[in-house]
Image 1 (cartoon, rainbow, N blue to C red):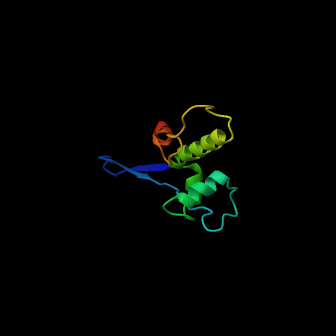
Image 2: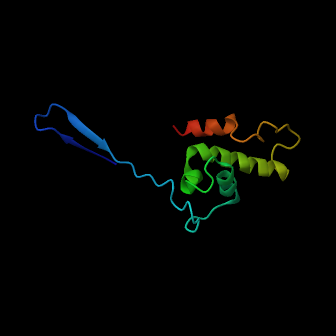
Image 3: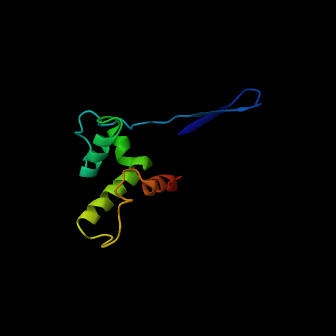
Length: 105
């Protein structure tokens, strides 16, 4: 959201941006949002376990890692990349996940 006002002399426009940040929603109790096994892994391996739960579910930085975890699970189940080398995908936060993060901008 944004709002603006013009000064009485109309010499300049003052702009103000208001951001509503809810990344910490449901961080301590985990009672309001359904969490997948991927969300739990992301949270437990993050630098702030138990904090910023909502952000870890929706932020671009973490969506790439969720995608990577899903790919690893599919590789382990034998339904993706059969017979191909997948060692690059096994590393957390590899370049693939960072490219997904950058693609949203």
